[in-house]
Length: 245
Image 1 (cartoon, rainbow, N blue to C red):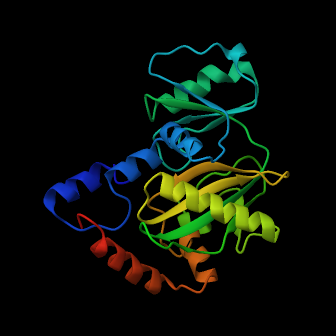
Image 2 (image 1 turned 180 degrees about the horizontal axis):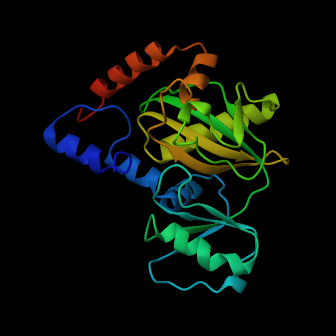
Image 3 (image 1 turned 90 degrees about the vertical axis):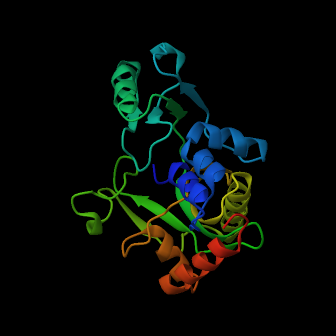
C-alpha cells in the first residue's frame, strides 16, 4: 500500500511532508484501468482493454488474442500472464485474481517499450534521457527478487534510447501529458509503447520508481546530467514547496 495513496493519506492526516504523488495521483496511477481512462480524455492513446470485476465470467471466444491478463492494481509484473489462445484465459484470470479482485485484459501491442523519467510538480518538468527495454525473450518482467542486482531475467536497458529524434520528442511530450493528466507530483517513470508507425501509447506509470544502483529512473536522470544526489535534493525541495506539504 505504499504506492496506491493509502500511506500518502496517512501522512497527510498526520501533517508529515512526503516525497512524490499525492493521494489522488497515486491511486489513479496504481489502477491501470482508471489511468487509461483518464489519459484517453487527455488525448493519449492506450492499448485496447476491458476490466473484469470479481466473479465476472469472460467468454474466451470474445477476445482477440494475444492479450495480457493482469491485476488492475498491482505493482511489478506479479500476476501478469500473456494469453495466446482461448484455453489459457481461465488460468490467467485466476492468477491475476490472486493479487487483485479487479482484473485488466489488455490487447497485446507490437511496439518498442520506452521509459521516461520525470521530476517536478505543476510547473516546469525536468525529464531524464529516455530508455528502451531490450528483450531477449518473452515479455518484460521485473528484476529477479532473489538477486535484484542481477537485473531483469530477460531484459536490458539502453540509455539513451536508440530511437529517432522525432520519435524521442513525441515520447517525451506524451510522457509530460500523462504526468499532468494523472496529477503526478515529485517524480514518476512513465512507460510507453512506441509503434513502428510512430504512434505512442501509454503502458503504465510508476509513481515510486526505484532509486537503487540497478534502477531505471536514476540511470535516465544520470544520462541527462543529474546525479542521484541532485535528484534527492530536488525531490525534498519539491515536497516542501507544494500545497499541503
